[in-house]
Image (cartoon, rainbow, N blue to C red; front, side, top):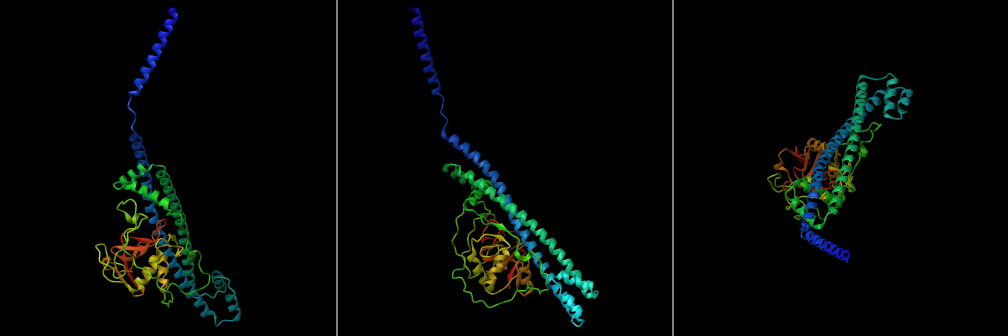
Length: 415
């Protein structure tokens, strides 16, 4: 009897203890939902800031790499032109020296299968004049220089492609991170990005990844610099004016619409989103505190009207067609549409303007609508209001940007 009562008492005590315990635990405060939200926000912000810092460096590196490739391309083209001149001179000397000679000598020379073979035959015949010796030496030196420049270019091409791949990987990482976040966290990050440059760059990387800005980007060795001509040829770099039967684009002038952009970091020139388009169209250059006088370059304006139709075309180093452009390739293509042949290379195009009596200025306040603006390793069209239009760099399609987006211009003008 006592045993049963004791058992019942123990059971009651256990039940009371259990209930008391549950009541005690229920008095602890519940962790609010916003704590998780703040934790997710802080973690995502830290990661995106890190991604953004890397993205800024990668974009700067791509801009510099594109400029270096353009400069190298210009040097190669100059060397190619000099080599063509030297080969033509040597061929002329050989022709003058041997056209009155015996048939056997002519047969030997005319049987040459390449330029190098011709040089060897001239040496073997022991009929080399001082002029020919100097010409042969110049040709050989230029060919060696060209081969060295092309090797340097190929290394830069590989390095630039590696940067493109790294930038694409950065975009993918940022995109995956942002996609994994709730809409509320994304909204708070976008708000915070307005005052946080590195976070804004990280968000921009995610946006660029989503839009696929690097999907079509590539870097190639221009086809005209992959080999030298074994035949003597005249210098084909001089531009000539030709008649053109092509129709002008019906809508070619910039308008006042402003494309949408995501986060403003006050560095529009470094982003894939375009700044505001000039509102004054092609009627005049429009004076501006950052450059540009009233007036229009008639030739440049006509070429620009074609260039503007290529907005959004991807950057392709060595490209000079609507499937892809580099900076000087877009200029060369646009001028070709109005029957003017320009060399492919920013420095070569600047040299052409100067050597052919074109209008040239180093005062950016005197730029006119349609003028070409030249930087170290870059060229673009001036469109007024301190803005330019051109092909930018891998990952940034043809479009508008600040006059100083690629550094300080060293000059500009038109033919």
